[in-house]
Amino acid sequence: MPQRLTAANVAASSTWTDPDGVRRPAGDVHAWVPGKNQTVCGLALSRSSLARFPHVAWHEALPESGPHADAVQHVCPRCRAALRPRPDGVDRRAFRRP
Ligand SMILES: [Zn+2]
Image (cartoon, rainbow, N blue to C red; front, side, top):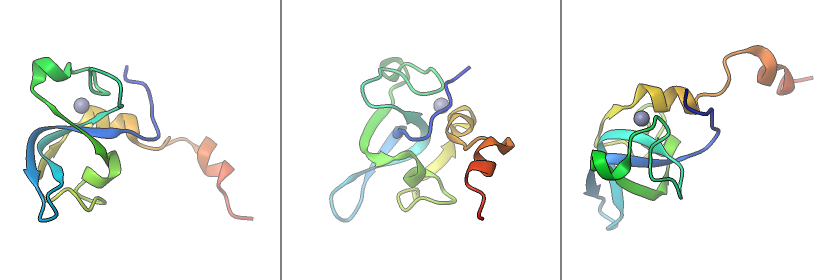
């Protein structure tokens, strides 16, 4: 089981360069924690030919919420699940409005 995380960066199968000259993720994207040699779902970066994007936050690469998801074609469901906030009520109670 992948560890549940609150933040991560991005590893992707392809790259494009935006008009400002910054590398952005494209193709298949996975969550990646800097310093690790594998994605959150357990793929080895070297064996899977995934490029690392330490300057792109995970939520920035999600098509529904990210400003850098234009070229993203597929978001790994296992990485997405690992980064999702807890669905149970624990966190919701903590953040409940008075
Ligand atoms: Zn993944």
